[in-house]
Image (cartoon, rainbow, N blue to C red; front, side, top):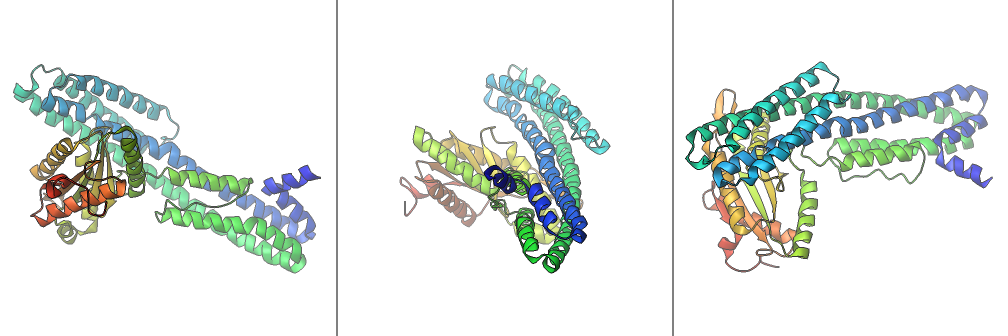
Length: 434
């Protein structure tokens, strides 16, 4: 008897069967229909979760590696470090493997998706050949042709990354269609379950109430979870303390939310994930006595961009800016969208002087050439940067953010388009209140 009770607690199907058996014969068909549509909803939502993990993440990861591969040839021209060739070779092998996996994957069956993959791979192959030529130059600083080849290399890298962005958009469009189908199934299920509740209440009130509590309540929890996730609240979790199909679906949705680490507009790390990473890096730096630097970047006069080109144009500018900044970062560094037109860069194992050098390189690269062309007009923009270093300027991650933000404010206040380091702003010591 105990085992039978345990089976009832862990199986939605068994509870549905027992509840339906208690009802009168006219409710049997309605009960079976409710079971069928609820399972259809589960399958539809689980397919959305599987698609998120199977299709979007490989595209994002591959694009990240392609952008990272742009750094070794650039660094080699500047630093003349022979080890950059090994790093480029490692990234190239990883990118080739991921292109091979995507070609073999059944997740990318649409012709448009296949075309984007092939075109991105072709651009990457051209970039790799040029990159190898650059890395083979014995005296890069004196070779003007190498600098010219660098522009060709960056162009191929940019086109490959852009094609992967188009692939991402194509896959995401398919996922949105799947979500619409899932919502349609949910609406149908809600209608049938309400009908089952009313019929059970009229014919067998007690059995109807027990059955509705077993089905309707978890569906409401799942609906709330899906709604909150679609609104961007990835910190929300569906709480269903049960072991049946709904409990497993709740776990799947929670897992999907945990994987949404990237900002939906720019593709860089989200603010929530940034805060988690910064906290982790600060703890690691504190434990092992390492340095950690943080850059806070803010696009100057960005309101004018939105006023001139509209918010869609502003969105394009933010995406182009994030992509440009990524090209100047190392693979261990992490860029995140902090909010609006403000970005943050976590730089592990990086001291104050090195962080300032990187910030200056980013500032110069942004101001040196137009960010993109909008409505036939080239958009040139500048960026202000504040830097702070742990533990020189702060003892906690919150203090580090406050210090970098204060330095950013000083950069904006002193005329914009400049880099301000917190320790140069304040002299020796920590932020006020630390």
